[in-house]
Amino acid sequence: MTRIVTIETRDLDKSAKEGGCGECQTSACEKLSK
Amino acid sequence: MIHCYQFDGLNIVLDCHSGSIHMVDPVAYDMIRWYETQPAEDVISRAVTEHKITRGEAEECLSDIDSLKEAGKLYAPDKYENLARDFRKKNFNIKALCLHVAHTCNLNCSYCFASQGKYHGDRALMSYEVGKRAIDFLIENSGFHKNLDIDFFGGEPLMNWEVVKQLTAYGREQEKLHNKNIRFTLTTNGVLLDDEVTEFANREFHNVVLSLDGRKEVNDRFRVDYAGNGSYDKIVPNFQRFVAQRDGKSYYMRGTYTHFNPDFLNDIKHYLDLGFTELSMEPVVTDPASPSALTEEDLPVIFEQYDELARLMVQRHKEGRPFTFYHYMLDLTCGPCIYKRIAGCGSGTEYLAVTPWGDLYPCHQFVGDDKYKMGDIYEGVTNTDMRSKFASCNAYSRPECRDCWAKLYCSGGCAANAYHATGDISGVYDYGCKLFCKRIECAIAVKLLTSDIRKPGDE
Image (cartoon, rainbow over all chains, first blue to last red; front, side, top):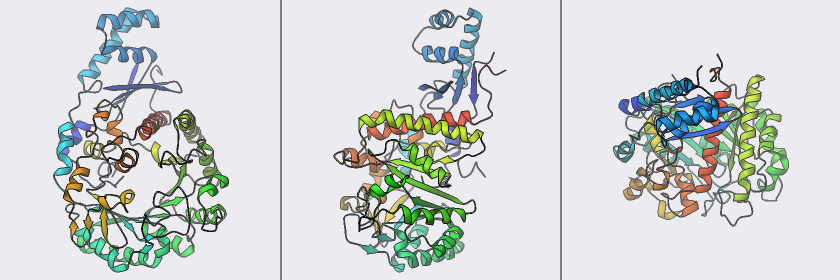
């Protein structure tokens, strides 16, 4: 039986390598949600 | 670092530094919590004893935990401190301004952080010339940013409505010339929200915040005019008319709860009864000596309210009558990048407030406090030491946050709240932290309970 279900979430390591684009609204990511 | 909690039958495990979220059964819930502090053999035998499972089942679960650790989705190491140290110091482009178009207000709310809109100074309205220069200043200093945010704020911005319209038109003209996209927003108490404002705002403003504290008796306790009359009867019809014509664009009903109404869920239900579905209800942040200040004794009531709010959202989602709550809005798959999670709102660096005469402050909550003046829209940011101090304010700048599971959700918290609570923007507003952690737990639970994701043991 499945005891652990992992929810899909944004890969933070990958986002670190990509660098922040800075287009999000001052407070979804602007880039990914398009 | 992991954080484990339970909500209405869900066992939830958050992996802090990878951002991973796991729904687990009771066996895995315990084994994951024991894993880091007990030898594998002890974890297995304890699971067998306490959960009445076979050794093979316990070994299989432990193997799954090992695999998740190997994949970097459990007990992930913290790799981001260096990013935090350098990120804000690489550039000081500005992407958002809070334009204080009116340091005056037609209401006289005693809990107002802006001292009834005057910010501890004289009444003032921003001129078109100052606002125009502020927009030029933003564009000149925006660097690579294409999306720019301008919020019309006060006081009550509708008391300077002609200038708001002129500045919006000027911004629209300039964004075309400079290949920018300006998102205008407005925060209003609703007293002057007539048909003309409604039509203009629904055409031009990306988001509009409508201030109402909820039930009539709650709203009219603080939100009164200068004659002491409550504002509820005047503003609610204005808000209802406005929202009916909003045509799908964003708005927020935004209230403040205080020691007098820690049962704020009743105010949220009242919003729903009035037909509003994009909601926000915020804890008052005020002098602890104030009668309206929230107390430690209020916390259990407030926590229960947040739990019940989560349940109400799940129930209404199932009934096909969903509503949104500002702090429960999370995007798990397309959420913020690690840079945003570390750095937060950008106050004092990429976000600044502009007074009616063009002075710059780190954010709207510092306006009127002279030691936080950062420069002006003519000379730019001249207090670079202050800017550097705000640049180093992030999820990693406070020792108290180092072992907090929520630091990559809160980004180190609100500098203004920290300042008002401790006298230092690098301080920790402990009460706010408790509320924030509770809200994130509820937000994730709502997300899971309203999703189609199969639960552990569903097959």
